[in-house]
Image (cartoon, rainbow, N blue to C red; front, side, top):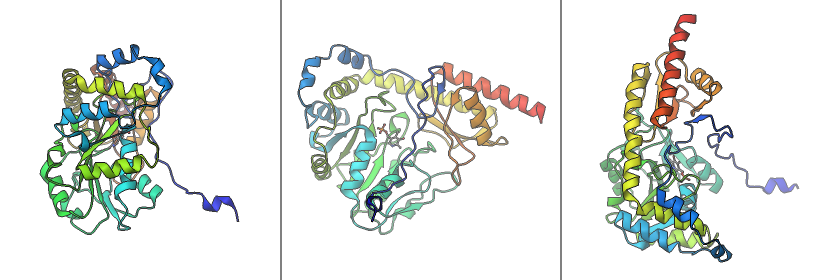
Length: 356
Ligand SMILES: *Cc1c(COP(=O)(O)O)cnc(C)c1O
């Protein structure tokens, strides 16, 4: 007997690289190119560090209240965690216990199958159609739960709320999780459906649209009963998941609606311009409603482009996986960063034609 036989073995999720070199144009993890709301800096600068002697508020009340107000919900309908990865992992543990397979698309956030494996939850992936759209009928069958990202990652494709509503309505015996990490860049949120369906959990994050990936704040919204069950699991695991500084910074972000609207609109404007420029350079891509574009070049393989971009200190994301091996996921940076990328690509693609 070896102790190794009793280890819970998993193949971990691989996140995009975080290079130390500050001159890298970093378009590989969908971070926001703009700083967090000015109030966030103010709160951290003025933070009463003597208060760190004490444990944080285990109910995260200030942030829960701010988010409930922002979304027009009651406090009992909001659950906060350390990034939406934490919230999603806890949701898998809480809700997906039937022994039946859970369902999610074949191309989606690659953490879903990692959590399923970690918790020994069986799953079946459902192929997206040829345009990378969800086929709703694939989710009208017996299952142990459903998770869908809207807009989806890494494709950037959003479906209408009615598509998700049908899936939620057809599955009253399963919890349906909608991961809205990118919804603020142009998707249709399912939050308005929460009052109507007690099996719907909507998850959002501060990492993308609120420019706070380094702070680690994510949250779930749903029926009071779902939120109570999530809290039971949280308090059976670690009561103090969110630290005092983060709670205060999160509140400051939510309080500045104008800044949030302005920076997300800027990212969207840059994305729309980048789409036009990429198309001119011979790229094709599904229409993105996110802060990234999932693009394939008509003639040049993605691996080649990924490699030359990387050599020139431009980081994007590429997966060697069926159906998507010829795509690059390019996060939207500032206008200046995107201009550098577009200029580089234009020169590379032109010169490449001359050589070959
Ligand atoms: C970025 C991302 C998350 C995780 O975000 P954190 O809040 O930083 O943990 C979850 N789901 C999707 C689809 C994402 O792209």
